[in-house]
View 1 (cartoon, helix red, strand yellow):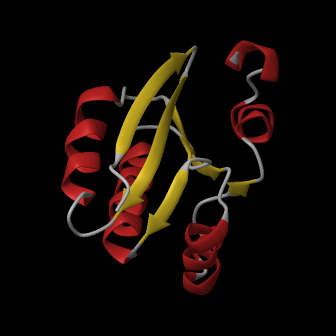
View 2 (cartoon, rainbow, N blue to C red):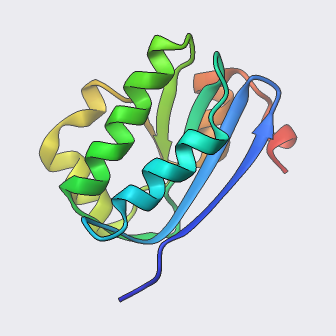
Length: 121
């Protein structure tokens, strides 16, 4: 079992939340608490899921709730960097119709938020 890792960085008008390890029923509340500390009203939200090894529907539920909260507060949510099992969970649930999914964080920043990719470095 991989430990859940959570980090964030703030760009102008955008919060990038990086989630790594395993996001499941045992760790979903950790992500929920983390998000309540780092999200800013009106910011776009980019979930960097490149290092996410496993995600179940509990974790997906937290991500979707954060996306809905982001929209209510005037921002736009998106997911980036999905691979393996987490990508399969997103594909099977069809949530890409509700939350845009990008191959990379740079693509998400440029396409979804208009922030130049170089600003993410």
